[in-house]
Image (cartoon, rainbow, N blue to C red):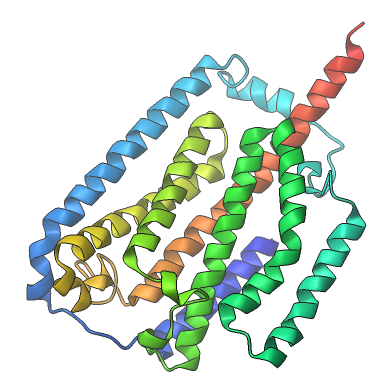
Length: 312
């Protein structure tokens, strides 16, 4: 319910931006952009091919697992009563609670200091995150020793959350500057170019596919996130091709991509709003999938402990 409420808030903000803050920038006509259909088709075929590979491999792994082969028995065995409201796997298990409170206090204390000294946005965000770095390292190391894939999934969620912060900052800048894209490049403006976007989103897409295989197709919301990331990946493969091969077209408005406003297919969403939407529909099911995976980890730990205590 919390995720649904927050998502609705972001959706309302996005709708306001689309309606009242159009992005200012170059636009291509239909005749100028239509010759690049082949790149979009090739991008879609690449993504579909990898998606088929992930689905087949994950289902094969599921059938090979003696527990997951029968979904009903797996559900009966993995589901148990007495689980806490917040999964234990999501709690701090290695870092003392007092460290967490101190990190939170230090993060908040950096905000007025950054404002007072006029720190650039990237430095202010770095100061906010810095107190959490040792806690993240210690807790991740502890959890990795107990469940490596769950820990990797958690780190991926954190990275995507920071990615959402970057896109949210860009939208806020567009609001403040009246849709001027040249002044709205997020927290780290120096990294707002096509190669960075391509590497970041492709890494996320591949990682979600790898997790779907490792979790043997049992996490439904992870499949939703992977499907959304696949749509996003088609867009970035196309954009990277335009940026690399037809750079003049890219600068003249080809950066709109496939579904961006005045793009190859086109929607009412300008590029920043479209990619914010992409990331939102990836991040939301990722959060739910991570929560479900934490529940699974708790149940597996409970079953292991029960079997251990029952052994002579």
